[in-house]
Length: 71
Image (cartoon, rainbow, N blue to C red; front, side, top):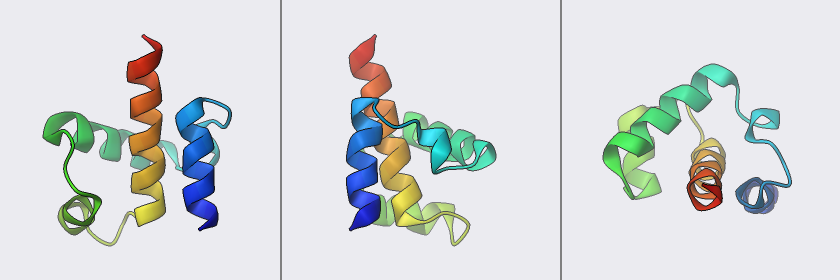
């Protein structure tokens, strides 16, 4: 999907995650993944609810992976 391709480039640092995920959601999703680790996207979606999309989850996860690998 287009979101999947965008998530790939977010994960390389070539696209900023903030272009696709609003700040409040970015914080909420980031905190969730940092607390819960490599949880499946389906479970993350279920627990975070309809306020977030799978695309946003993918992009934030890729962003966090990129940040972790850059430091």
